Amino acid sequence: MQHDKVLILDFGSQYTQLIARRVRELNIYSEIHPFNKPPKNVDDYKAVILSGSPMSVRSEDAFHPDLSEIRGKKPMLAVCYGAQYLAHFSGGEVAESNTREYGRANLSFVEEDAFFNGISIGSQVWMSHSDTIKSLPTNGKLLASTHDVQNAAFKIEGETTYAIQFHPEVYHSKDGKQLLENFLVNIANVNPDWTPNAFVQETVEDLQAKLGDDKVVLGLSGGVDSSVAAMLLHKAIGKNLYCIFVNNGLLRKNEFSDVLEQYKGMGLNVKGVDASAHFLDALAGLSDPEKKRKAIGNAFIEVFDQEAHLIEDVKWLAQGTIYPDVIESVSATGGPSATIKSHHNVGGLPDYMKLKIVEPLRALFKDEVRRVGASMGMDKDLLGRHPFPGPGLAIRILGDITAEKVRILQEVDAVFINGLRDAGLYDKVWQAGAILLPVNSVGVMGDERTYEKCVALRAVESTDGMTADWVNLPYEFLQKTSNDIINKVKGVNRVVYDISSKPPATIEWE
Image (cartoon, rainbow, N blue to C red; front, side, top):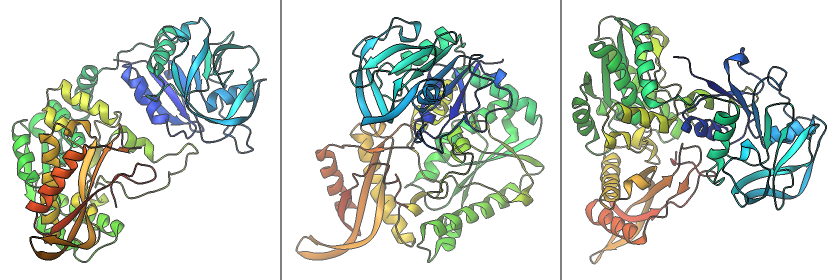
């Protein structure tokens, strides 16, 4: 089945992925492409959205998209930088704003138009720009204003072109979803038929056609992405899917046995491999975070390769790659994004394995992966699991790794995560974990002086991990958790809570 598609041209905004996700929430398939590397055939897309940008249209280095195949030919929505670009280069004027227009604002004027159907004066929108449109482009018609921004929204008469100086994709724009629906469904006539059930049916059919009777090997991690990928493949090829779940010794307490038990109930063909000793040997003496990641990656490849070779005639390697992994490596200028750290997902098998790659989830965002899993009847506890980094507890133990440090952190983590579940807080947190610090501090237990480890607890709320805020957990919960950890985990005498947001801090400490 052919779905209507929406093209999002990325000018480097931190919100571009959010635009795509909001469009997907309307059951409309959207794709992100750098503005200077658009897809070859724009005719494949029913509508186009131009993203915001950290750039100024007044700069000598301003991004110049080639809109000759789009403008006036396709319904187009220009957001923030896109709106200013249309004004600046089409007969209007953009100037530096007297005050940086950032944060919440309210619509003070709304013209009657299909674009603002169901959206009234007073609706809250989110601004994020330092330039502002002083005069509209040729044939521009004003559609909305706020108290500080006269030209908050406009359209080009004679075209299906709309432009806004605010961001409908962020949650702070209360009617943002309605605005996108007005434009895409009511104005551009895009068919909203991109549903989880449709995705499962089409993906299974595609996998069957692509894989035939070939055997596929998949490295399970116990996480959402690899589990949903496994279920899609299982639906498509059944017994020809061979899953390998490697215990690197850096998983949560009892996770290896618990997850294997969970997979049994899903009917998957899974082999559990306990390689804890191999990974600990590979990590011996390493303190640098990147060296630890590489050592874990190499050890995983060795173990996985050895196990994969025991399966005869394997042709394919399946991976749980999702859409943010695909687009994260390309910036708006077409070059690689700055590497903050090696990707958490340990992957990348050596060339000599000569396996073809199959990635059933590469079109989906994380929230869509969960919805697809739910539509296949997968366990809600598995689908609701917090993300967990591929290198596991190795990047939550600052400094070198020893079996004793892993034991301590597993115990601390178990108290914290089980406590969140018991208090009904687990599902209100996007990701939580404990970090073992390379710090000993003085304490008193009974009448004795102690000199033991300090641990930090981390809990964040996020939608996709790109940005995250620390969670304001109740003091009573933190107090009980701290007491439980210090009383139950030998070797720890101090607990702190991390209240840093991302950015500037990352979610993991390494």
